[in-house]
Length: 496
Image 1 (tube, helix red, strand yellow):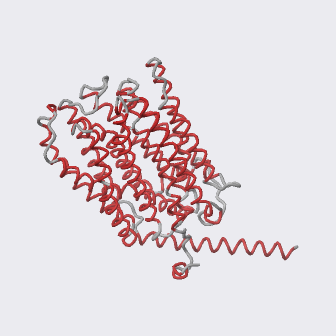
Image 2: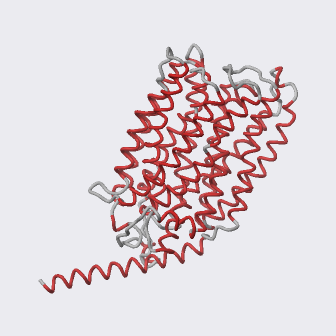
């Protein structure tokens, strides 16, 4: 037992730092595929020749399908506790499904008809979603077993943020700046996406192996809730929705931000390619943004370990909200002359502030996952049930239903601007309506999402003091359960 354990009366189930660092890679492994499938709309429109509005509708339906699979898989996850643990089988199976299906999406036969391409990409997208849900359910659920120490849970955010910074920045730089110029048709070259999908699939597989190692020792019954076996019913979802107020508010806050973030990532390629007329700058910017994002995240996580996760979420959201308004003001002068290919002189200032804003928004986005674990502990505290799978997937269900409209919003915006059924060439000028559409996605949606988050956090009760109360109560219950088991065992031995 560590010194901290002694000081806290042993009430916390702590993990080793390396276990947290490795398990966080499970989220990174699924985010690798999020990066790849984030180019789905771009690939299907500009490589396969499909209509943007139709592709947007398909992607929206897939996100809804993603949400539908969540409660089902979460239910079975909470019922699973076999030879290989509760979480590890779902992590491995999910990753294998994603690898196979995502590779097929980006290997759509080019010589086939448009109808065939729609059917092919949709079928494999449906399969991909199942694998994605398998693995992401474990990211949210296994945290409650990995550690319940409020000093440690923010570390998940730190590692997750660092990995995501490297992933999103590195992948953008790799695809747009290093790889794309090597191909004849640049970003719309089919061979580029064959190679990119294979590289990213391999990276995800390696990360999943590390994540399985990280959770291995904690994927056991004694680290699950109060230590008691819990019978679950599918109708338990209704009880959670009705009575777990912190989860309700977290869903509102996180899903509105997620809607905006997914849309921004999808629109960012157009922002650099067709607004700034320099698609390669996208990769360079992502690379330069690593340092400020790292510093901002590190400071935010250090503060959250002292002040509490809720305070860190609210403060970073406020900072991001203010910076978005600054970005919108700086972008207004760009509305004149863009169609003629004029790049604004304030581009360096704009991108510098954009990097800081993304860093602030990233703190709030990444810290959501530890907050789900807090909500799961609150549910155990409230009802006595340890059901992290159902808690995490219920969150994901609503989160994905709302954020599912992100791709549709991009497709509808592009169609409104008059580019819905044509290939948009890289580094080519566009009309002013296209500018307004992309600016709304880049700045308007995140601002609205942040406002919703700030309001929701007014009713989120799990601050640092409340979490101490919850963990003390759960520790007492675990002790009673342990004593009861010992007494039963001794009684059986006496009878023998």
